[in-house]
Length: 179
Ligand SMILES: Nc1ncnc2c1ncn2[C@@H]1O[C@H](COP(=O)(O)OP(=O)(O)OP(=O)(O)O)[C@@H](O)[C@H]1O
Ligand SMILES: [Mg+2]
Image 1 (cartoon, rainbow, N blue to C red):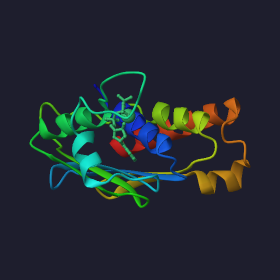
Image 2 (image 1 turned 60 degrees about the horizontal axis):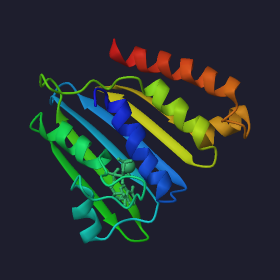
Image 3 (image 1 turned 90 degrees about the vertical axis):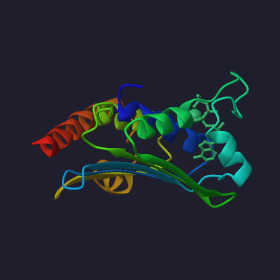
Image 4 (image 1 turned 30 degrees about the vertical axis):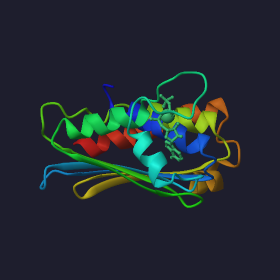
């Protein structure tokens, strides 16, 4: 996949399928240490050790519509291609934490990409999930939380007009991190 934002969209989909009521996404870039780490944490059904081992195997999936699951193996490969690392921390009934860390300036490191599209799609699709997103670049950061948004915009975060406003707001905030 060409963008981290697409990996994130894919992995948050897993959290939703695992019946999570909240998902916390964090992208942390440290130019001084030359690292970029992504973590996706949820309070869904979780996985035991065997399920975790199988999740990193591309030929394992609990989906019934297709024989391979690729979300996790693709993110793991993207991180490891840069000399980074990948871990799953999970327990049944306790939720899941997925962490991928990249060497930031590696030639094969995928760009963060369009987080505005990813987050607005997630908001449009899943009105019931509490999402928290944080993107840190050095000493700058941007944070978005559906709990706070609901206080400002009311409960209809999936309304097309709100989603569209949020998409441009996120895009603006993300761009200001790049400077
Ligand atoms: N956050 C999670 N909580 C619980 N189980 C998970 C979670 N993420 C992944 N899994 C388990 O790991 C399996 C593999 O996930 P992966 O995203 O790689 O493939 P998939 O979701 O099955 O298929 P695809 O993502 O290609 O549509 C899932 O089928 C699911 O059983
Ligand atoms: Mg998946």
